[in-house]
Image (cartoon, rainbow over all chains, first blue to last red; front, top):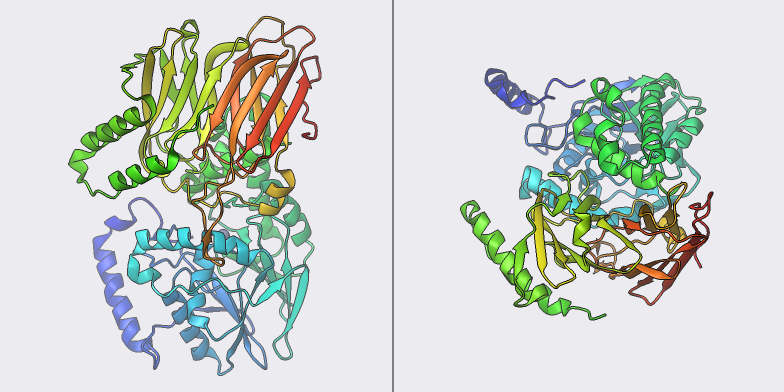
Amino acid sequence: MTTSFGPDAGSTHPRAALMTVAAALCLLAAAGPSGVEPLAMTEVAPGVFVHQGAIAEPAPDNRGDTANMGFIVGDSGVAVIDTGGTPELGRRLREAIAARTDREPVIVINTHMHPDHVFGNAAFADVPIAGHANLRDALAARQDVYRQRLTDELGAGASAGIPRVRVDRPVAGEVRIDLGNRLLVLTAHPTAHTNNDLTVFDRKTGTLFAGDLLFIDHLPVVDGNALGWLSVIDGLERVPAIRAVPGHGPAMVDWPGALDAERRYLTVLVEGVRRVLTAGGSIQEAVAHVVEGERDRWLLFDAYNPRNVTATFAELEWE
Amino acid sequence: MMRYPLMGLLASLLIVLSTPAPAATDAAEDAARWDLLHDMYFKDRPVEEAGGRIRIDAPARAHDAALVPVRVEVEPSLRLKTLSLLVDKNPVPLAATFHFGPASGGGGIETRIRVNEYTNVRAVGETQDGRLLMTEAYVKAAGGCSAPAVKDPQEAMARLGRIKVKLPETPVAGVPATAQVMISHPNSSGLQFDQVSRTYIPAHYVRSIVVRSGGRTVLEAETDISIAEDPNLRFSFVPVEGGTLEVVAHDTKGATFAQTVPLAAGAGKDEPAL
Ligand SMILES: [Zn+2]
């Protein structure tokens, strides 16, 4: 959970002022040789580091830091998994890597196309990028819209320097990456959260980077296919992990129990939309009534549930 | 059917669009745009306020700008000849014009549109004696025309041209009933930019949909890029004993999609398009 969430988040002036002072002190104390403040990281398993983003929409108070990202250190190099929502977050992630290890990043892995996970790629221009085989086309069709949205939310400074879409290692099916005495398994999934979801499994520690195939606390966002997502969950559940890193939520959660809440939401969503369709109802009726019972169980419900219902209605009416 | 000179229209609208206006003049700006659209689409014909005889039901704030459901309700006694749907501030404002035929059940129409910025959405009905009646609704949404709406392009291409018709369980001959027609089509607006190829994805959209009941015309629709992906129409028609409902659509690449379903019980399941 995040303390900055809520409609009154901006009203706590004394605390905000305190935070600013604290942040400035932190900057003085922690800025590396490059002058960039390294991101706070949690070591969730030996050699596996995660930065937890805020559960919120990108906004000035969180500087676009709204998704989880991480890195895994092997004997011969580092794998970076998602890079954050702005070029600056990417630079701060790179600074955090340099602070933890003298190994260099050898691969950047993007779990999917969403801007809060990929725009930090700007800080890794010298590192090859791996992603789902559909990632390049999907992001290419959206990047200008995403960049414009970021400019509207955080200003032109935040979106400056976003490079052209680049996917050097497209993944279809399964690909293994050897980091030196450490094998990562990259798996490309059928359409679920998006049409380009990719997971990363670190065999050494049993840690699964699930990307946005796993939402915790943050309402799941359907930008792919709700039914497809449910069937991908059934497959994911069999991954022999002991912990997972969600795309949004805590730095780590137990596996596979962490899938339960998301599966319940998606199931209620699909069943609710089907009921409206069977009764000959409209999209507006579905938006007004479907999944209401889930409202209190998630953050950002009103921001995303109407869109999820709309998208799922348009998907299921072809059944 | 005549097509409007869209490029000229687009050019004149872009000039209006690029003129900055402070918020205080929003109402004046809206009025000026309507004057422009009135002139463009209806020439010097007077347009009256419909005053409740035509109503628009649209979300005040859309959840997905690329898929905004709009229902136009028309007082049945009006027996409209045509109904036009306009999205004032879209690059191509005229979303569709529906010409109603003898097998129309009257009433209105429901469809889904794209909305590019906060805008008025208008329905203009033409009565049998040639009067134009208008109503409008304000919709807050942005980015719908350039939004990359197709979530799964491979699935969309595999499904392109599939037509699904939903009919009432037990239609009664002669009694107006509601039908829904869905046409699987990306309806590409030509405004969606591909960052890798550095080009706009070419416009490719459904430009006409004709529906007939027992061989008689229910409606003929001229449609454009303001209609959302997978064009979707709900309308009223008059069933014919032992008859069929026939749908024929054409797109801008010259493709024809057609589907005929019997009105008998058990009908309404979709079959492969021709
Ligand atoms: Zn995502």
